[in-house]
Length: 135
Image (cartoon, rainbow, N blue to C red; front, side, top):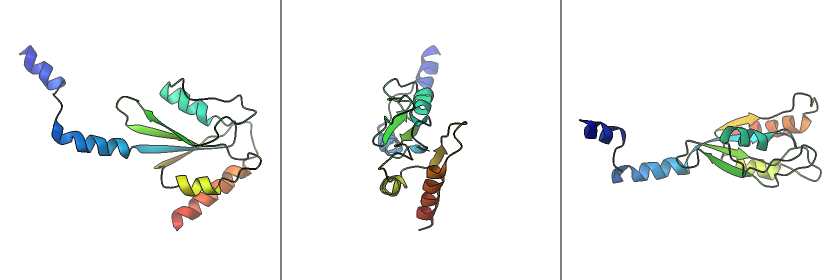
């Protein structure tokens, strides 16, 4: 009886399900993190996933120079975090990144510092995303 129970809770790998697992891994639900430089996007990913490999800045200068994705949990992922470059950086126009990443995210998480009232770069990006979704 114990063996039957053990087989039930630890089933053998079903080769018929392999394509479905591969499809699911390629098409994970993705949370797109958007915010100004130093808002805490990378810190959010690190806190949620526990991954120490996520580079976190000091809040004064950007550390995320290109978008990076982090699958969670790593061994059998059910969710992907898309950590993007900070808005409001000098000499950075997010339009091209927004166009490229617009279809990569299933939900948008806007990350802001509570004591940072100036959010015009975030509002402009949100308007651009909304406009892109209409087209």
